Amino acid sequence: MKYFALINVRKENEALRREIDALRMENARYREMEAASIRLHDLLRFKEMVAWPVAEAQIIGQDPSGWFESVIIDKGKVSGLKTNMPVVDGKGVVGRLVSVSSKFSKVLLIIDQNSAVDCIVQRSREKGVVKGLTAGLCKLEYVVKAGDVVVGDLVVSSGMDRVFPKGLPVGQVMEVEDRPWEFFRSVKVKPMVDFSKLEDVLVIIKEDPLFDEIEEEE
Image (tube, rainbow, N blue to C red):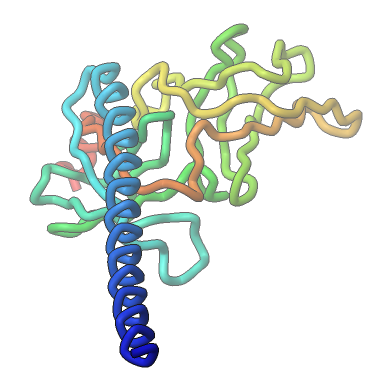
């Protein structure tokens, strides 16, 4: 009798383990759905702030070469995307499109050293260019020694580069240093976007008329 009782207990334990595993999987799925809902809510909120139409896209890969800070998204020419269109998420500027195929596009992130975003300091209106510095930081270049920039200042796009609409959040000043041997101030900026957790983005369907005219002439 004890033998059969042990067999029954073992079967019950196995059934309970399977049930627990199923519940864990279901819980993980619900958590993922909740996280996706929060991301989409932020994107929709940001979408309302932009005057241009947008295309929602998901990141499906990173630059395979490892030479650039770039990602691949699941939208392309079929969705109306073109080279140089700006990319954002619910927090701020992500980057711009540098190559576009029929169904996929490559986004050069603002943390890449080849990236440049014409910006202004929102509080003081000081001008500068945000360039990539490291995987998690940028720098605000061409701020003169007398420039009014302090830690905590919000840096936004100026619109002068004809790529990014004016007023989009780019980053926050985290360090300002004056070096005697340099003409400009050394300003480090922490991007508003957490690139380590980037999954969903918005591509702003904003074209540069001047760029299009040059392409047509060629």
